[in-house]
Image (cartoon, rainbow, N blue to C red):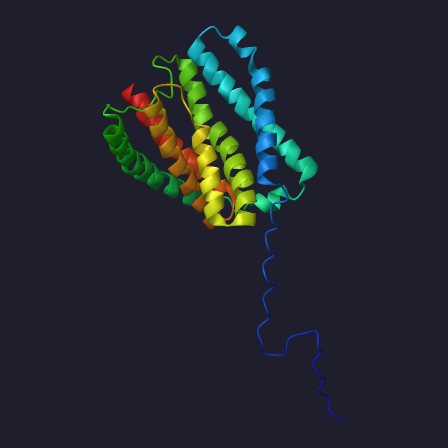
Length: 257
């Protein structure tokens, strides 16, 4: 009688490589783009009312505006997470949360550092030339920070630009809005729609041509961040890229004021 034991059908044959398990597919967004926009607009209204007491406590108008913007953004993040957790419990899998953080930090820093000169000095200059030809005026982007900032104002600006805004804006515009549009209608619609919304949210009052210049640059920035987010497959990388973009912009603004 042979001592040879026949191979089990549920195990790989001797000498063969163990087959790799396929990576689990990312679930599609369960929220619709119009649902996300409605929720976001409602949250904006509620957060704006909640931030009104800031203008009674802080007398400096510039500092009060910055502080209110930071509070509104923080409340928006909190309310968005509550909404997602309550109605879309698999949202973390949908938007992508990486297992390893540092590779995404490195990739995001590099992309953000490259994105700023390309968008601001490339796209921005091209849009400026077009607008000057159309209007016959010298085009200047509206001021995004008050002309005279106290130390407290600088501190709030740094916290808002480097931490609060990247988390708030990437969570909604890339993780929620882009994800919903792209999952149903493809990358082009997702990047274009979320990029347009990203540009509109950066409206700053002033001459219309200056506002169009700023929003146009932000539209292209939003499209580029959507591409990067899609490529990396997680929201952390785009948050870091956004923060790096803002670091460069804020440094130039503070240095040249």
